[in-house]
Image (tube, rainbow, N blue to C red; front, side, top):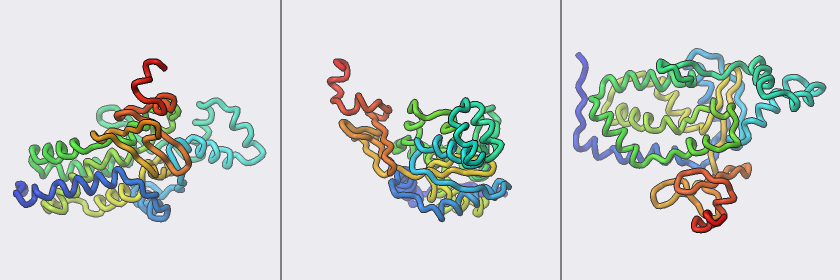
Length: 273
C-alpha cells in the first residue's frame, strides 16, 4: 500500500532552508574543482550506461567554440590543422562528430531534443512526484519560483553563442527539481533510487554548464562575479553583470542582456544614443 505523505508544520518550516541552500548553489561564484567535477561527470555517464568520456574544462561558455575547434585541429594533426579554419561550420561539425561522437541527446516525448543525461532527472522526478500530493509539489515549485534567478538562461540569448552552445546542459536549470527532491528525500523520507539521487546531486554541486558528447564532455567553470538589482534581476550600470575568470563579460539591465555600448551609459541616455 502506497504511503500518503502529508506536510506537517515543522516540515513546512524547513522549506526556506532548502530553497536557500540550492539557490546559493545555483548562484555560486566558486570555481569548480576539476577532479571532483570529472568524477561527477563520469558517474553520470555510467548511470545512463555510457562509457566514461574524456573530460575537458573551459573557463567560460564563450570559450567553448574555440575549445571544440582546437580539439578538432588536434585530432586531424598539425600538418592539416590549418585547413580547419577554412572549413564551413557544417563541415566542421560533421568532422568533429566523427571524432568525439554526436551530442549526447535524444528526442523527448514532446518531440524536443534534450540531453540524454536528462534521463537521470526524469527517473527521479517520476519516482518522487508519484508519491507526493500535487499540491505539495506545487507549493515547493512555487516557493522556488519566487527566488529563481535564471542566470545561465540569460546568457544563452547572447548573439556570440553559436549552435554548439545551445546543446549545453544547464545544470542550474535543475536546481528547482533538486531542491524538491532533496526536501522530499531528507525531510519527508520519500523512498527513491538514492544512488541515482547522489549522482544528480553531486553533478549539480560540482559542475556548472556541461556540453556532453558520446566520447567527450566539456565542463564550464562558474562565473567569478554576479551583480543583481533589488529584484534579483541580473543588472549593473557602468559595469558587467556577469564576469568569468577568463575575462568574458555579460552586460545586463533588469535581467535582459545588453551590448556593452548601452550598459556603460545611464539608461536615461539610451534614447539619445
